[in-house]
Image (cartoon, rainbow, N blue to C red; front, top):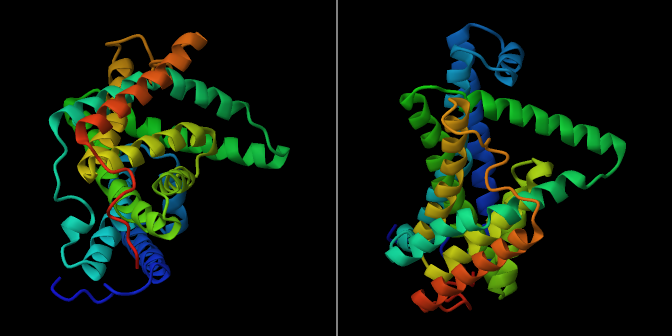
Length: 309
């Protein structure tokens, strides 16, 4: 946009603008999806909600479509409109204009698999955390519901079904969530705190919290940190998008292979080990890979793209 409407507003104003856009478009696209479902199935909204909670057949296909609409409404549309409102060149603002080099893409790909033993260990620690009995029951009920829905999506024995799952559960979330969290939120917190490391941690915390799956909070928090530093070191949003896609796509493919008896290792056990040497070693190896990427890119971790409001 030649003269962005909100180019010169404060950082606080930009945060409020972003929140407003996310809320408005999340509600709009969710309502649109529910109305389409009400019309298609000929049921009221309360009955549709029950159908979606345990989808089968045509309801499962609709739930995947509803998931797609939600991702577009929560992440992609608000991010694009925010970029248009605050920047003369949204692609540059979101750091979509710079391509990471091939070595960096290879490093972030390897990091997804190298870190797996430590990620699984964090998952075990996460499951061992107990709060109050009421909260524990609520958390585990929500987790069971989310797991049921995810596995319903992933159960397919066709290449077409696998392709749809990769699109909706890997590609679109990677693109949309990285635009919002790394492209915008991390940038804004870098400007507020004047500390890129703190901005990466805060953004990773919000990234994990927004999924509302407490039993996976720590592994997702670690993923958020990796995504944040991939973005900072390369200065390109494509690096974090690719890392995010590889992480999600790997889970989708492993589940597909295990579900169809091509492999014996399940998605939950993939890369897991009880050997602490391997667990700590996986973390150290991942850190070493990111140091290699930093040396290759020659990046300025002080983050020159502070948003100063």
